[in-house]
Image: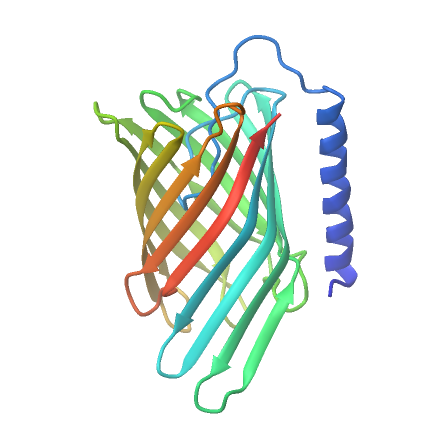
Length: 279
């Protein structure tokens, strides 16, 4: 149930999406000339070097995402529905992004007692700006700079205790083969577990993919170090992705992701399905 700031955020988000839909339907962002190749951020964890064309809107939606993680003491399950990100090109090399998950839920169960703690609500508001440094279409070599952050506007049980922010420097390489190569390092300032301050977190994503007709298949390795003062943790996953691009809709895709934890601090399995559409 959303209330207070969370409820107002949901109303604003729904209103913004309705405005986007009405403008798209009216052709307010119709473009002349050839556009850059369709290049969604979904479904991997890495950041993209691609920047969408000026005046173009792209909507990317996580229809459902879930995860499971358990050890001898605790079992954790979580999911989110309606994770919506809107991207808008504001210049030849620059775009802005805004996103929110309409519903999230996480359950932590003590295996000894069976007691379950639940946190649920609308997520914090995500904001980002990406600027292409080299080749805004990402080919043959792409380099971009992304500034991003979250504003604690979510539900009481799920929102962070303050603003969090970070920077990414994604790179895309032409390997000379049919396989692509992407590298995305991230540095973030995130809130401490006790909510009293902030600390640094670092992550790296290395991925590759290849087209097979209407499908693109790929894999990634994700490593993340969270240097929380109460105890640092390192997570790592091996991620598989599959993307279907309908031949009749060159500006749309349906995507799937399946991730496997590589150590005890990582979710055992993550899975998701989503779509993206450029207007």
